[in-house]
Image (cartoon, rainbow, N blue to C red; front, side):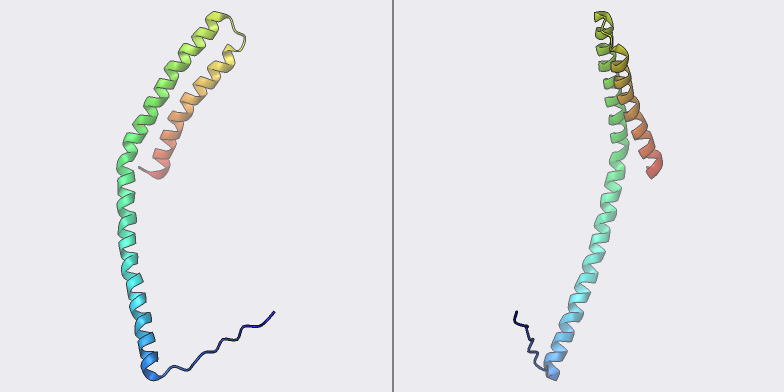
Length: 112
């Protein structure tokens, strides 16, 4: 393999000043852009927090709907005389409890 040899030329005073000014302006640009990014992150944080209450209520509603559907399914299996009625009841009830517990835990954990 051939080794690469960088041939750097010496900079005169004017070129060195121009390079330094370019680096300073680039650093200032990135610093100003970072401030806009922080403002954007804070705005997104506030929007997500404002939607969280509605999302929690939606999870409770989905849990209630699953409870009703599960109750009907278990009732049908029970009337049909199926042997696995207990398993089906536990699965539907567990899914309802899971949704309610997850919504409550997230709300209390993140302090929303």
